[in-house]
Amino acid sequence: MPVSLFADRSFAAANVVGFLVNFAFCGVLFVLGLFLQTARGAGPVTAGLQMLPAVLVLPFGNMLYARFGLRTGNRTALTASLALSAAGYVLLFLTAAPGLPYWVRAVVLAVANLGSGVSSPAMTGVLMAAAGREHADIGSATLNANRQIGSLVGIAGMGAVLTGAGGGYQGAAYAFALTAGAPAVAAVVGRMGICTRA
Image (cartoon, rainbow, N blue to C red; front, side):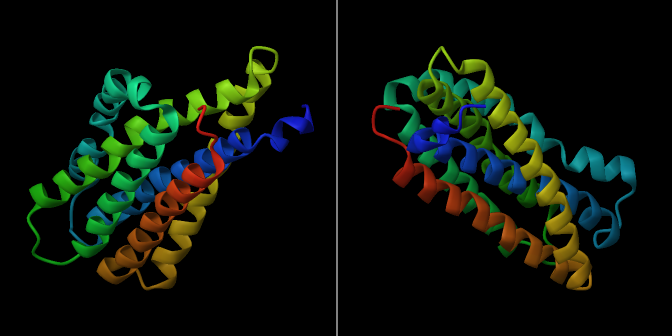
C-alpha cells in the first residue's frame, strides 16, 4: 500500500472517521442487545425486534445522502450527519433509565443511525476522491479494514465498559456515553481534516 496516501489529510481523516463510526455503531448494537435482555427483561427474539429501528433506518440515510449530499458536499454532509449521530447517542445515554417507554428509545435509535446512514457514503466519497482512480482499490480496502477494526474494538470496548460498570442501566449508560463521544470526535476530525474540495 502506498504510504503516501496517508499524507493526504482527507484520506487519513476518512479512515479515522470510518474507524470511529463503526466503533460506535457496532459497539452500541452489542451493548443494546445485552441491555434489552438483562436490564429490560426482553427475550432474544424480542430484543432483536426492538433493535430493528437502529438498522432499518440506514437505507433512508443513504437515500438522504443521495438527495442532498452531493449538493452540500461530502465534508458538510459528513460532519452534519456525525453531529446528528452524536446527538442521538447522547439522547440514548440520557434515556437509559427504568420505566421509559420503548417507543422513545426506538425513535432515539432511529435518529442516531439516520446520521450513520448518511455518514457512510459521505466518508466513502471523501476517501475515493482523495485516493483517485489510481489507488481506488487499495483506498477502499483500507477504509473497509479500518471500519472492521473499529467494529471489533467497539464491541470489545463497550462490552468491557458495560461489565466493568456492573451491567444493567448504569453499565449501559456509561457505554452509551462512550458511544456518543466517538461520532463527536469523528465530526471534529472530519471538519478539521477533510479538505473543502471533498
